[in-house]
Length: 225
Image 1 (tube, rainbow, N blue to C red):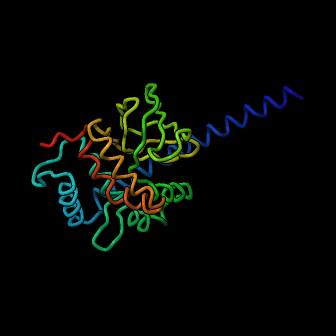
Image 2 (image 1 turned 90 degrees about the vertical axis):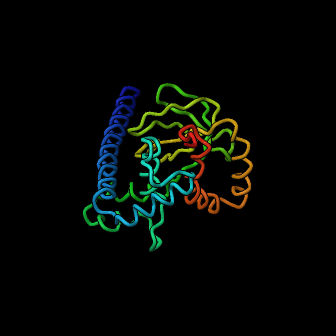
């Protein structure tokens, strides 16, 4: 009886691993598709408007080319957070335009990604690309284990990072680039965000969705030039 039970558990683990592999491949295809959409189908005027707003938020000269690190942040903000003149986000427009071509798994993942935003975490442990962190304003015991998707990260234990973390299948992934906050700004950011967090979860999420990218100016990817 014990042997049969063990074999059954091993099979369950194999099924889970196979499902995770399929989900990860589906997400990779979706990720490539949505950025291709932004590049080739999104309204050019919206992209120009978004670039101006992004530079204004970070105090940058919008006539200059963004450095690679900030260009990655801009592209992810443009897709997931930027609100167009008609009040929609580009990712929402992408899903509406392509939903009939999407698989059920892609639609499920899209629903998860719509809720994603830059969020502050405290880094607790780093082992290679395995990151253990806690949401900045939630109980200390609530730990999240995540690994980056595509982009290499250089996190430091004890520091605050703004990152998009989403559940892909059974695992959590850090989606897109992240920004470590410089220690000199930590107290200022905590004081500012704590007041908003105390207004409730929805208000805090709305604020981060709209203004989370502003925190990049306090991070290690911003040199003020």
